Amino acid sequence: MLPCEVFSLRRTRVTPGRQAAGCIFPPFRGRRPTGKLDAMSRGENALIEWLRHRFPANPARVPIGIGDDMASVRLDGTLLQITTDMLLDGVHFDTRRHIYELIGRKAIACSLSDCAAMACRPRVATVSLALHDGMSMEDVKRLYEGMASVAGEFDCAIVGGDTTSWPGKLAIDVAMLAEPMSPRGPIRRSDGRVGDGIYVSGPLGGSVAGKHLTFTPRLELASRVVLDPALHAMMDLSDGLSMDLHRMCAASRCGAELSAEAMEEVISPAARAMSQEDGISAMEHALHDGEDFELLVTGGEGLRAEELGLTRIGRLTTPSREGQPTICLCDRQGRFSYVEPRGYEHFR
Ligand SMILES: [Mg+2]
Image (cartoon, rainbow, N blue to C red; front, side, top):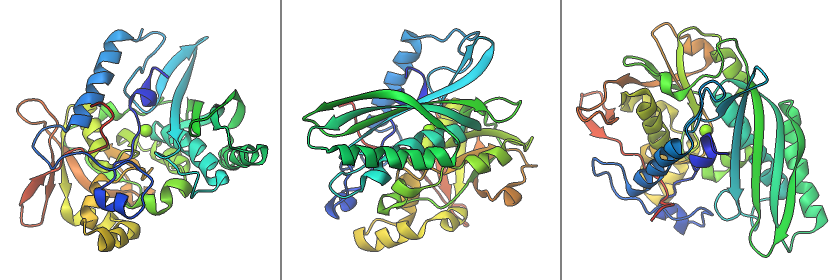
């Protein structure tokens, strides 16, 4: 899809330690924080910028174009949201270790999470498959059964797609159409304001231990959050908090200050267990691991976070002097460190 996620290249950052432990994901090739965007971010963000210019959106027909969780298009007077996600064997799942039902489930759930990110109700999806030659008909049916289970749970009809086979690895692409849950329309990542609280919907880090296959898309929560008038901006956490918060800050022209104390409260048990094994701090896992599929929310003082089950982890601030988003992690003593967006380098 030209708009949104296809060109935001959802990706999972993985540390060398996790790779050594048998992780399916590519090794993390990012660098230690340097005060600047790492090579991955520069390459990817540069591509997104190029695409924005190459395919400019006509606001009358495309109110939200490239760069958010979904694009917004007006067809016959009706506002529709569209997203697409491609998942690859060896990157987002591993056919040697994961059952086809869970792989299929994840493929649909990722797009459902993008719908939640913009407070949109999923309606229909198409599924395109590049099947590996060695897969049996039974394998393919199991893949579709996994998709059917989660699509049915969230009332999203699978209405078609394309199926091909080749000697390469399994690839799954899902396109999904949705409609806004509220008269407010889709909630964007670019509407955060300086002074907003930053909130997350659940524990962070260590998703690779299993949650990345079994997570529940936060659609029910999104349907309640969108009713809160203090809600400003929202997106889902697919590439890790540091990367996705950086994107939200860039879109909203803000910086961010995270509270180390509050972050401690949202570190997942899986991240803590992983930290014991790989020696990377649990906080690092929470900040940088991908595929949490929780919601990242910003809102004004009146946001009913507790009632909604959201945990406050920081606040939006003014960007740095150069106009770049700066994310800091602050401890109780007022000491702070910069948090760099990290990820896997697709463009080298
Ligand atoms: Mg997303």
